[in-house]
View 1 (cartoon, helix red, strand yellow):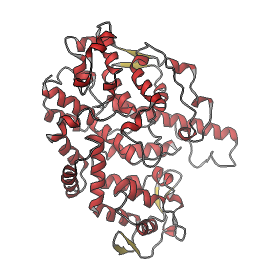
View 2 (cartoon, one colour; view 1 turned 45 degrees about the vertical axis):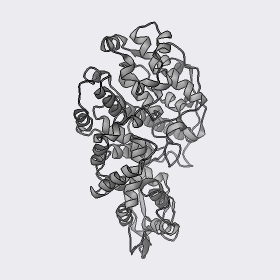
View 3 (cartoon, one colour; view 1 turned 90 degrees about the horizontal axis):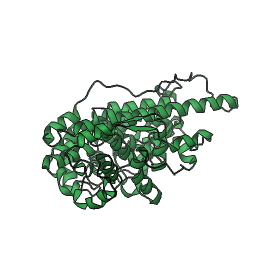
View 4 (cartoon, helix red, strand yellow; view 1 turned 90 degrees about the vertical axis):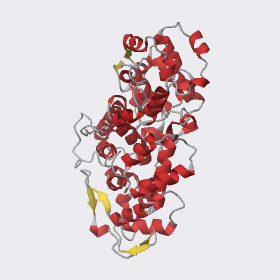
Length: 459
């Protein structure tokens, strides 16, 4: 197999969501440099939205005094709008030419994990993350920290002078910027004081409520002054620990879960000196020769979203009931907009257990109509956020995903090509004889069988 094909499919999986059907023909001949330029090309930014009109925020149907019927109606609209956001985000991952933007947005979506019921807040945070995904980390941090979804999720609406709530300040330092061990409990308390008064109104506009702000002197991360929330974020960004923490997390996600300290040193220094330029950092990673070393290829277990998006990019398909894809996300353990907690989703082996592995291996056959879906998602109060309804249970329509795949196009594209060269990252570990033994030798069955191997779970 040509070295450029090996490099390019590795790059497409890490800087995007795998090979698109239209990319196969020239993948052997394209230089990595050209492909990197294509991946980083940015179009005019378009927001992800939903079609249903917003409910008037002034009328709070969720209040205790609202009639039960109104609450039910509100819950239904919220669920529909959040589902639309989820599916439109997934669609961007599959179909957008801006693969690097959407992959980076997917990374930040897990890093700045938030889970709220309000679809308007979810939409705002999601688009903020997508807009700044390849921009400057400082801009991203400031906008996310002022997003109502995050202020709501981390209780900063309740953070007021004389009664500070430390949740927001703690998570900003522990999970979003510096990491544990780089601040003290006193820094958490003083940081919380700096963020007092940060909140939002019902329309979802950020508000600095001066009458709730603690205007006294604070000592935070070794500096003393009458700090505001903005000041606190600036001081956090001055810490080299912030650059190192973010760089390490990016390295683990895009390169290898086993970190190389020397490379982290080099990358985090250049990230810090660039003023937190995300695009520059990612270009440095993907342009380096070490990124393409064998030890970094095929060593990551695809997350459920990466697995689904990868199949959808390679197989041209029409999905009659796209809402069924949310059931697959739920069954596989990764539902967009619903991280398990503020730390986001775990990675690596956490994706695999006895039930998810079997379904992961069967998805290509189910989507191809060769076998029924025989799993039911448990009614999980954590994922359903307390909303119990018939709609959250799996009904009969989900047994048939109603997917039509254009196998004729797939046959044409893969004619006179080894399918495994394009579908599997580490071919050496694959037993092609057993794949062919289960196949009728057609391209269709070879592709389905390759996607049903443990090797296809790796990227």
